[in-house]
Image (cartoon, rainbow, N blue to C red; front, side):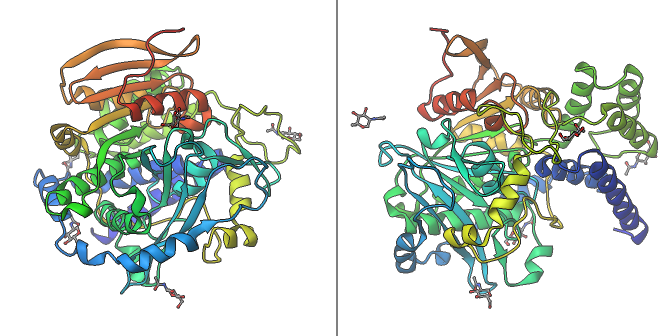
Length: 493
Ligand SMILES: *[C@@H]1O[C@H](CO)[C@@H](O)[C@H](O)[C@H]1NC(C)=O
Ligand SMILES: *[C@@H]1O[C@H](CO)[C@@H](O)[C@H](O)[C@H]1NC(C)=O
Ligand SMILES: *[C@@H]1O[C@H](CO)[C@@H](O)[C@H](O)[C@H]1NC(C)=O
Ligand SMILES: *[C@@H]1O[C@H](CO)[C@@H](O)[C@H](O)[C@H]1NC(C)=O
Ligand SMILES: *[C@@H]1O[C@H](CO)[C@@H](O)[C@H](O)[C@H]1NC(C)=O
């Protein structure tokens, strides 16, 4: 990159940061990071068609088996048991674990995880790995504490309540802070932080899993699923592909029993997702016809060659949105100066992120989690080295592998909206097995489902980007169906 170009990128990032900050200083960081990241791609060259093939072949790594330390891991399971989290409510009837797994001993690189077992029949329930996106955002701070985990942080920032729709009702769930540099995960080799991308993230997550399964050997042969949202639209398919490629060469006891993946509001293709976002702004009456026409006419998302005129219209599109929460266009905003929030138990409190940051920075909480004392934040700025423009070729390979693939979408997210997901899936031209139909939770339509050959698309009605936060009950019903290998309920009885 020439220096003029890098100055431009820097300037652009700064403008974007200031702009984003001014419209939503309390906004969800995960969505902010994704937007910032995608915009920063605009000066990159069009990816070559060889990129993807190279990418995937580089994933199969000869040295991985040597990174597993069996004896050490078994000892650590007991040490990782969390007795109780400070401020947790009465009636906790499940086991929790938290700690680090070393993924590179030489560099001193470790990933932090939080693991929750199902209160009921955990020994027969599947194992799910949950990943948040960013890139650079924490699966623990979002996934576990604000979305599908067993607890939510109360507005005091010190106590917890139970989430009755936790996904641990139907599975044993690992929340992994990935890559190193995010949340409590770290590396002692600072150079690692400037050399992070999709490739190293998948590789470290895979080494994490191999070691984690030695620490919790009772899960080695368990049905295993990976789920995630947002930029995890990259992480989830890439990790699944890496597991399947390496399974072929692994000795039997190290094969990971991967059964399926679920991706929510996932960033899976730069072109279709960006186009889908602006089309959604227009269809939802958040943007004017004029601005939308300008974007359609002047922005070349396919080559990601965005001229200044195009960027002018993109800025207009952002201005026209006004001060709304883009990742849930109908949600209230957080008002941090309001003394008490007026949200009932079932509504997602838009200030949850602030409560979570406060809670996870309490020294006694970090201690209870076996985390190294540090300033914890929801997202970190990482300079990202590699990110293919499209994950669709990887998804195509996963379809041929026969694992179960669900793509779900909260239908009031404006950042990675349903239009983005539909354009991406439609481009695969898969035959339809089950026609579009509503699905139900109780008497209410939970969303819509369409079954393609090898892939299922499910919408969750009234959910934003963080689907389990905004529609916890529907999200649980959806993921339960996914784990059972059935389409979501057809009848309203
Ligand atoms: C991916 O990582 C491997 C191992 O660290 C490396 O050899 C390879 O060049 C990387 N590939 C890309 C596309 O960065
Ligand atoms: C990183 O460095 C700290 C301080 O020297 C040390 O306590 C820790 O064990 C190191 N981490 C790893 C994974 O080696
Ligand atoms: C737990 O397992 C037992 C024995 O298989 C079964 O009878 C029971 O219904 C299960 N309970 C739940 C909540 O899955
Ligand atoms: C980007 O688009 C502009 C205007 O259409 C064109 O002049 C330029 O050559 C394009 N750049 C690349 C790298 O394709
Ligand atoms: C935030 O809450 C305070 C205190 O209740 C109130 O005075 C203020 O108007 C609110 N601000 C917004 C933007 O709603």
